[in-house]
Length: 141
Image 1: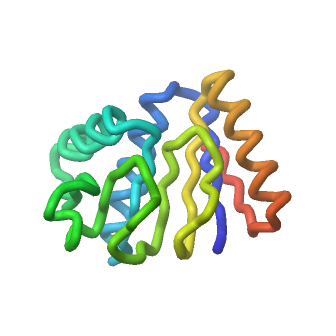
Image 2: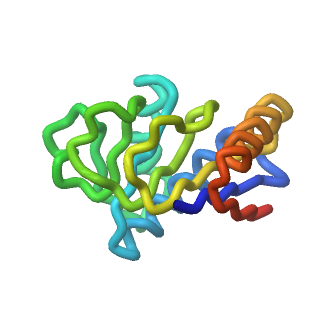
Image 3: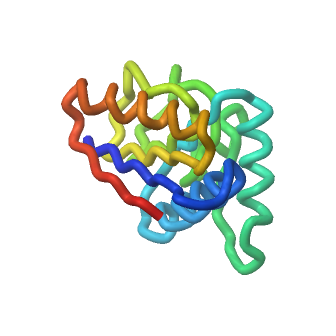
């Protein structure tokens, strides 16, 4: 499993969420399934709304984890990794902590927004993944 870090040189937390939308769009366009991991139910609902509106011409079928449609949606949004009803190809991590006790994902996409606190948390996650010997890729945008 590879971990890809996307580090934004400009922008803020909102720019990070928009990047997550583009990554979800790309995952769907390439036939992959993705689980978007948020830190709170409110943030999961906010990201759900953002996926509907971030790009006027885009349609990304998605659902919140607790919705019935999540069983078949290619993109699922939730705030826990327990009791996932299926495997996903990609995990888009919007959670401030390292993903531990990982279900099987082929890739983790971790976004670090251009904010001092978020950068420090991103550095900590990077070190933790490195120490756990995951293959890491760094993308500076």
